[in-house]
Image: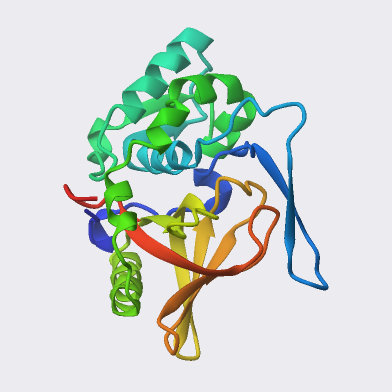
Length: 244
């Protein structure tokens, strides 16, 4: 569920409303720019914070929905912050809190600043990797996803952004599972007959990502990066109802 733009005091901002740390990768990927092929090798030493992509995008939006950062207030101790984090992530992943009922996070101006200083606390308190696997949306990916479905999905996501929402999406290739990942969309622009969506990718905390929709192909395309060789992905809008 997304409120109209008039019901929101501000828009989701990458520099403020995202985590400074990354969802780490069990496998490292190396793209050959000449052939476009991707080789893989295990991360050594093993990562300590992997398989948390859906935990991170859900939690980032919960902080946006339910927290107010108050840099003018003095910082508190770690245990107090842990309780505040738990209060935020225990709230709805779908419906924002009224302004007067938000959890106050003292001593920091934004989630980005909070996560730079309190990384370990946030990683421990936002949720475990199992929560990235136990999603309502996972039932949908086992059924065929048609080009008609993806055209309707592009229109739905564009409409959600126009209403002032920040849709969370599930990107998947099934049954290969070469990608099974979550992002937050927070902006868009028209590109000919298609769309370019601006996204928060928890695997890439340094900069916004892009997800493209091609109206002619009725498909979404994620450009190559350090974990994906580039190509078509199927997209599902999640955390927006009782089914997803």
